View 1 (cartoon, one colour):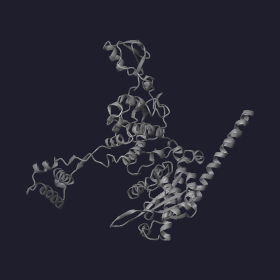
View 2 (cartoon, rainbow, N blue to C red; view 1 turned 135 degrees about the vertical axis):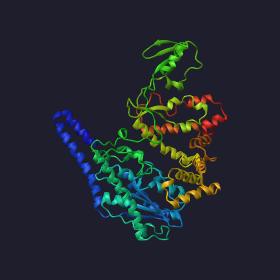
View 3 (cartoon, helix red, strand yellow; view 1 turned 90 degrees about the horizontal axis):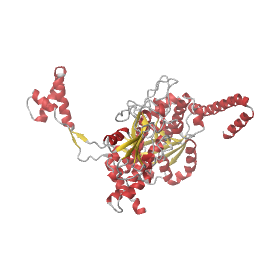
View 4 (cartoon, one colour; view 1 turned 180 degrees about the vertical axis):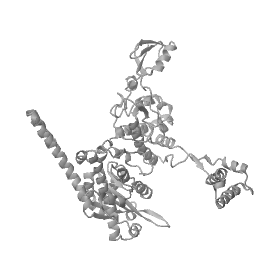
Length: 576
């Protein structure tokens, strides 16, 4: 492609009239490359599924296919992903089978029930690699099972439901199971018979029918992904862009948001516009609903860039207009200039800015640091408050470095991608997220009594006699009474059913404590800053913004060997 561009430039410099010919040639190249890619997908739709299946029960069997499989995976950086386990009325077994399918049809079926603790390291690396997409239906369930049963971490999984539910299509897809997607997208009837699906996956030897079922599940997933993916991009005229790129998230940025998130059809947080030519697939234009609590858009600038000078004229910092006015009203400073506002103190400040604090002397733009939008921005805490609030005071003095401005859409996207790091820290630090570790517990019996009392008070005349009798007995048994009265029902209705969980410890506090004992809080701060840079690719950050900001200053302000130093710097002190 580079050689083609070189020839075009040379022809254009020699004769500008060749621009029409070059444009026509470029269009032809684009259409040809796009056609080749889409033709391959149409062939995959029409052909009978014939996976090249390799059964792996030993380390030697994996070694025999390892290089070939890795080469196939690296071509497309995506694999079909599925797991099987024994599930019946009596028990749910451990994951017995792991299936991974490359886009070229090579499928490895790994019998984890036989390998147990000897899973090859290269296979672990593929599962943990965030850049290799693992596509399937409900992959979050398989990932949790693999972690619980075999200690295998799966990163970079993507539920096909996200792509299918947002595809501009008329009529839209209604069902997102693998069988339905295979039928609707590929026109393939996938065998999902109960006799095979719920068969004994821990058997000494798998049948040909079991192997075929397992391999096709993984292979169909990756082919459905390709078909949906290119359908999205061709709708926006981007087939060429991805035909020459293996980075799915670069060609289609919404994948970065959907990755490692469970798909819920009824509660999608990301909504697409109707299927029109104006529908946007770019992250800066996504129509998003707020994640978690809502945030208020700022109505005034965050940065006023007023300058505060020492008596000798040295610049101390930039600050807002209210601070400047306070100094002037108290007679502590004199105004030097109006635009920009510059004031000089009449007293010697307690300290002067150090070399590590030059960031606070620079002017900052009131714009989104990601896309550069100049309006409707919200403050973003790069290091979330749930962690920062538990930091020692020495790490709170200059936290404004980690407060930046984002527009509404970029703010929502950033918050969504923060969940990946929160989940990672939850696993590494044994710090369950609040949804898994409730601050308040509810007594189920009291809840039932309250519900019964509410129904009897509000709907007594419309409740069937038998049901009314049940509800009254429920209330009477709880209080040990023989007669229902209005006062008794009101007493039941106003009972407190929720109480504090004595075992509760917030996720943020647990993470801070764990990091204090190991890597140190400086490492946690740097981790969140780097995560922000990697996930947002911010292009408009203030000058001198850095992932290591303030760390040298902190080291100079805490005493060697103190408990505070161990908390901030962790075990890295010993290494130094």
